[in-house]
Image (cartoon, rainbow, N blue to C red; front, side):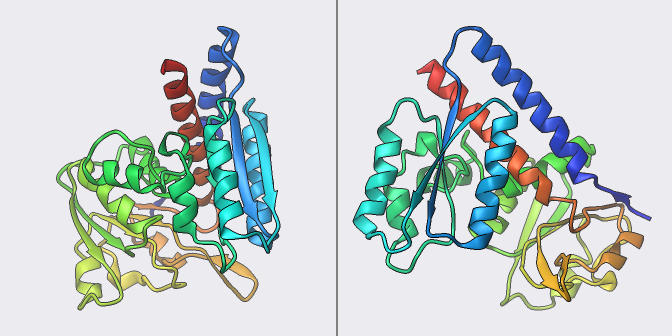
Length: 282
């Protein structure tokens, strides 16, 4: 039976650590940190995430400014709002909520975003730095996956790691993070042949494919570490990309819900601390 990761517990630990660091900096006379959240329209999932971030950041002593834009906003005005926030010295981090309306290009919003205020590491500059193995702000979800491995003392160096999914927000950066920690990494996707044979060889299996239950017992090596980033709703319940029965076979297993999910907001807060300290040093 696998060790089941307590994502909520880990997230609480990280938030407490970051809160303590922020409090120490503010006590030294520095201005309180501030995050801006840009949301276009009223997509229910985006609105829920905005509220969650407001609470998480507020509890840590971070001021949150929500810039709510009308769903019919022009691409020029949306990019202008992001540019204005980027120029505001009181704003230390900017979160761009998705999805965005059809008339607004996410790429154009990123072009208007100062990479030094890119809270979730999605700006091309930060993605490029990560690809080169240089210090960068990293997307929070894969960063949370790495944190799980580190806090559970999983041997990454020399491990055979398989990442299923090549998305820009999760799969690709996860592969790069594992590579930076000296794993031997294989990235699988929809065109991969003999997926079952490849995943069954993994010491570390990270799955971010967005397909409920696609990884079954026989696809996992006994004792392997399994990090499941997938979240789908099936019959009204949240389920992951990895079948729950894999917990009987794996050595370490992240459940859905309660595994990698809670780490995302915690790692955004960690990114906030990194952006804030960088701003103070400039």
